[in-house]
Amino acid sequence: MEISEVESTSVAIANQERILESAMSLLIDNRRTRAGCTFTVPSPYEYRHQWLWDSCFHSIVLRHFDTEAAENELRSLLSTQRHSGMVPHESNTEAFGIRLPFKSRITQPPFIARAALDVYEKSGNKEFLQEIFPKLHAYHIWLEKQRVESGVINVLDSNESGEDNSILWDYEYRVPVHKTYLRWLSSYLPFYPQKSAIKSVNSTSVYADALECMSAISKRLKMTDLERMYSAKKGSVISAMRKAFRNYDGIYYNLTHKGKMILNKTHSIFSPMFCGAIEKKQARKIVDEHFFNKDEFWTKFPIPTVAKKDAKFSPTDYWRGPTRININWMTNKGLLKYGFKDAAADLLGRTAALVMKSGFREYYNPLTGDGLGAKQFGWSTLVADMIMA
Ligand code: GLC
Image (cartoon, rainbow, N blue to C red; front, side):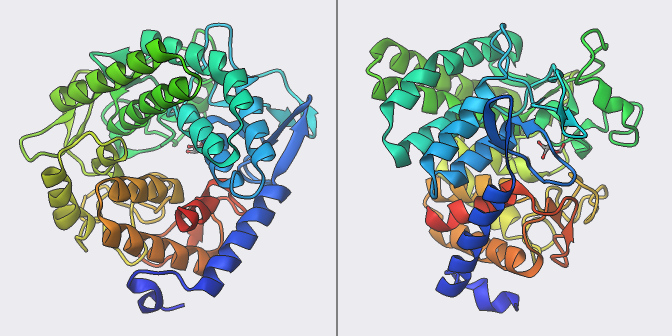
């Protein structure tokens, strides 16, 4: 398909239907039941366990087809919660079809409350909200105690950011991220020394949005004190983000563990829009100057996870440039939140074109649209949620 066919605003109805149908069948094919829990593996080939933010994304898409499956996905995820309240980034592990007792010691961007609220909005099932609320609340207490520092999220491991080999970690690790699988051990070994941390714009934006969702869920459950408490917490996180991340150019940048601003532009320059953290004027400037900039994020198959003109940009290296559909989904939501309907529709059009061209892959070359990484990849079905929004 030629980009021009989808360039303007809408995705042709026939294409929408094809995408929705294949998203549904992928999510059915990737569903597994292990030790009484039913969840969706990110890919039947490379990723055969349960992951935190993947499951949240799966449930957000599943809610359009099967709200019970969407609820079970979150039930399974929350069944992996540790006594401390922490929810591991990877669990329900197996080898050669045998379930293993391991779950990781790090978490991932806290998307669970967003997923729970979105699922509820389709199902109207208050009992489900009631059932999972204590676990969600415990997770948020844990997050605040263990990960919030000066009001923003301190990510303790690159795998915890969900962006395993992102360029943001180049300033932290001596052994280049992802050059060795030894790095993966740090997510499992209890006494593995934590060598680094970053204050993350993306994870904090997800967290601020989650606080708003916790407030909305509390409201649905008529817990007025908690509704107010979570809403006030969101307000303080938004102020803290401005203080910690805002540079003189108005953009929010990530910080190294020493508090130094990492001035590379990654997709996270759009993340504050997801939780409504910046003023509209600033958001418009970011959209005009960076989103629609052909040398930065408006490539033929946007949006790259690193600005094209950054010296570290690589179109094929995992989180160091390739397009990821969960990031497009977040960016699309942010654009809609600020009323940039045309930009959101353009992004949806190009995302749909990408999936029509290369299928549901883990990541894509933002210049050519070639599919890369795992095949039959779950969160890439988020394009279906973008279509149905
Ligand atoms: C990779 C990704 C991570 C994801 C996991 C499962 O490790 O970087 O974000 O959760 O795969 O898909």
